[in-house]
Length: 265
Image (cartoon, rainbow, N blue to C red; front, side, top):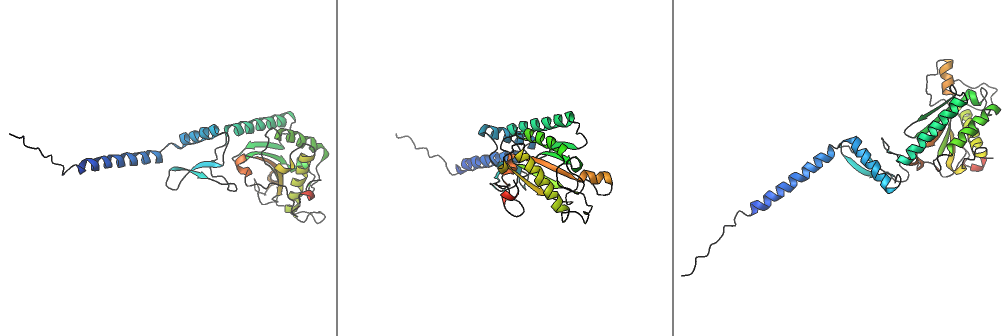
């Protein structure tokens, strides 16, 4: 007698596939949630380590999106960096070395009241009071100030390739009628240009990697209400920019007239 054929009920096999799909979706959303809650500091450390493996900073940085997560965003050649910037460890070490060298120069030369150095997000800022460099209302460098700028220039060359910007600033007092400069903006620009010329001619800074700008009274660091505060605002800043900020700088130096040969002797 032939055995009776057993027919299996397969009408609910779709439930297995459905259950597997639900499990996969659950795992997927758990992963997305964990990524959105990732510790920012650990993520930045990972990003920095990854960039070091590649060599140096590649122009790509990580920053939070509007939804709170993290995503790689290519800044492009001319874009300004987002905050916070994650510098390469090698460049950061060079920046620290330059800051220490300038600090030692300030201490050994007794320049504590006239020269200040600090490390900002954009790079190293060496701020020199105008009273050390110029006579009131003048843009001609005082002879005894030139060695200090030349020594600073030698320190600047410890970071090869970084762009340097010289920035001139004044207080809000108007110039005398006898001044050969039209206003504070013109005076601050002339002062920055003269410091740039000295760095290029006497300290050997590459003229293709440095530029100057005058801001007049528009960027004070203190209120122009006392003689002491006005003295703080009269300054020249020498800024060594981090490489990620170099992308926004011109490749050649241009004077206000648009000619580089007008700026450098």
